[in-house]
Length: 580
Image (cartoon, rainbow, N blue to C red; front, top):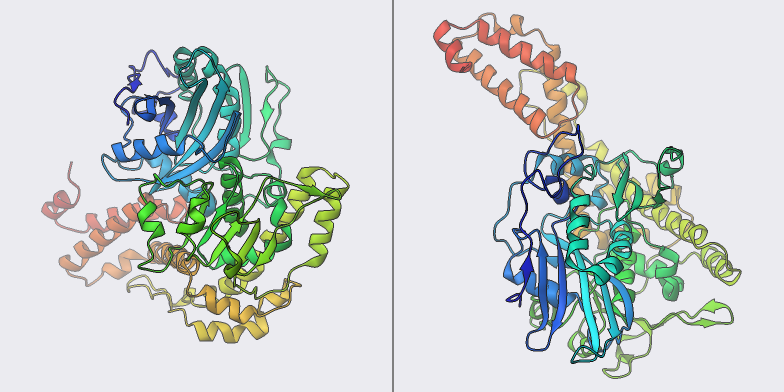
């Protein structure tokens, strides 16, 4: 697939990507570039090979042959789309193993501070594509066809789309030297640390972005407070690195957004058949973002083709359909995935009487293998009644041509509040399973988080259920029962239990540091003191390596306790416990 591919080597640290004067160089070459991108690929159409990898940069990127093949196939629209001109879309592929470096400390820091829905992918890559197809009589096929692809583990769709819109037209005009310069500029960007507003220079433009953090308030606009008067040229300000225009993306399905939210919450298998990769990928990404701030724990593929390495896995009829949201453009999938429980067929956006044409809810039996009309084909019945007032406001706003940002903010706030109303009772119940602080004593193993009993939780809903914060009526109990069987409950529960276990570790370390270690050591044998030293050293390493929620004062006290305990031992043991 990439037999004729060229590549540039990663140059020494004084040439490409050299840090600005006075800046500290990263420990490894191209570390700053790698903080944002895995690599940049150029895919072209070869008459003999088909889609072929023309260029990978840097040359020693760790993509496997299987990953390169997937990137080639997914970087071009299939023949059914008929995309002329410039098109942007995205895809997501599974990592296939091969050479993998340990995660750098910056990655771990980013994940610990970023919202869970924006953490780096550990098992998948995102591909952000800028595809150009224009008539060209100098080419045998009569068309110039080429894609520029940014491969990353960060879900920053808005940022990378904006970056592509700046660099792709330049690249198609000037080719390799332009791309080399762009990669050098990216290698001088600061790391994407949550909570910071960054200025990112590229091709004579400064992109100004805010990297979201867990402590950011919803609907906040930190960029508005960032001084811009000293920046020349004036920055291109992105309101978000990841949020799409939700109302535009979901325009044909606004009347069913409640049902689709439930299908996403329950991790149901869903096929989105769209007329182009752009519509397909935006619809899938919009749907999977509906659960924020809850992390979408299922697999999803914004654009998927019959050439994908997981094609057989996803289309087999020998087992139940996987928990995947699949975006496709080839009508062949209607026949292949006819056994899937939910299929959303959308066409090009259409208006009727000043309003966007809405797809209809249809029974799966009405699904035809040829010429299937737009619609949501499902036998699923929503547990909650839809918010008709919200739908009227959205449709009226579209009819009156209100600003897109206003309508998207309205829809996003509704979905966020709906998700929070569903999750808050779970959070409250989970918090009740945490051992009391007074039960944590310094010289005993800390107690464990108590088990989650589903029936106990359901009984608590009468007094502390979602009805306290949400006006929607319906079968909340039935929705929770189905949620318990979904990958999202498992993902949420594992994450919360992990966080609570870390909190218990931190509280236990604090209890040890607040206790009088000299009083405890009286009458203790050398073996017991050595055992305490080893345990304290292990706790200190875990607290620092796993970034436990403890203060620097607590860490300092832990070090003093270790020194005190070691100082009470004979010289020989001191030397063994404190190697030079």
